Image 1 (spheres, rainbow, N blue to C red):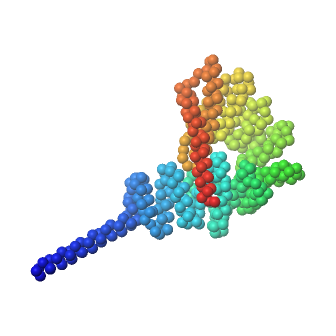
Image 2 (image 1 turned 60 degrees about the horizontal axis):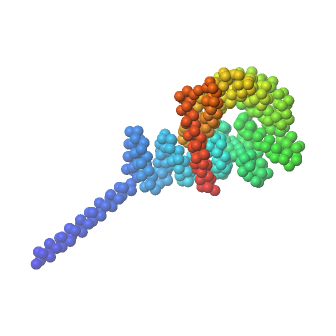
Image 3 (image 1 turned 180 degrees about the vertical axis):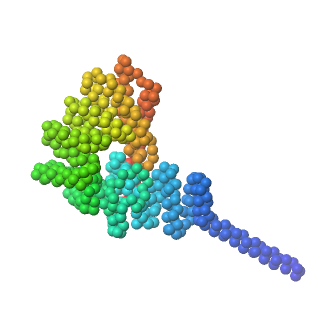
Length: 454
């Protein structure tokens, strides 16, 4: 009887010990499964092996288990690098947003986001300007003044082809915010015009004080001043308009004196003079010819100088179409990768063909060949990221031009299309159908970012 009781106690003790062991094992397994270090190590091994898919998955699992912000940031930066290599820009943006929410004063990531939206805005997605204004304001309010005065080159950019708009960070931020406000006014997005004019000019003047010789700052400041004068003229105050035109021209003339070896300073001044002269009539425009020719002589190897000359001749009308064609051909010869020059060239060659009474088949062929060549350039290819919409617009513009030329060719009794042209015609139709959907999708994405900010 005593032995039975003893066996029963031993059995109960054994069951309890087993239960403790099982619970301990379960706790250990759960503890290990919550440990981010294991997933971080797995991710690093996968990265070394070039297995980005598994590395991403492991980093995600680690991120879900990490409590320390410093480790979270390390993981997010590594994920950002992986996503950029994979051209997964949606997740790049999500990583940037998360980093900023954890560390609002992270200069590098704030810069990356601003650059991303600036490229979008320049591509024609106007809603991005409001995002830029908001982010630039946050930047200026949050970041220490000593950091703001540092050189932009200190921080890396995802865009290796980026041409810096400014040298110092504070100049860059004032320039972006000033331009963003100016663009919103010009697009008629705002109603409180007078306050916004003052803000735009004030920001751009601050940028100019920081970098007096900055050509980009001077250009947008001149544009903002000119726009303010035009708005005054709408109210009948033509004196203020005249004053604004003189002020804008003086800004750009000073820039030319400060940057005598930079063709952009000269072409900016000529572009402004052209706008002012065009308001007074063709005779005033034609008086600028010696100045345009003078810039091409001073900068004989500059595609920019000849591109502006072609625009000038085009504005003078049909009599100058041959000169416009010569100038744009020179620009293309000097820069065969510039899709804007090629698009302009294709159009000008076609105008010459049409104006010559359709006698000059040479220029028709030249216009088609130029547009077909432009379609092969990197800036006309499908891509992801901030340049996606710009490339799509370039491609769409070229296809629309070629579609018209191809149909003319088909209707010409002597005309026919090559197999490659037929393929492009079919592809053009598909792209044109998809363009609206792509625009709506990209605009929705920007609106989502605006909503988050607001």
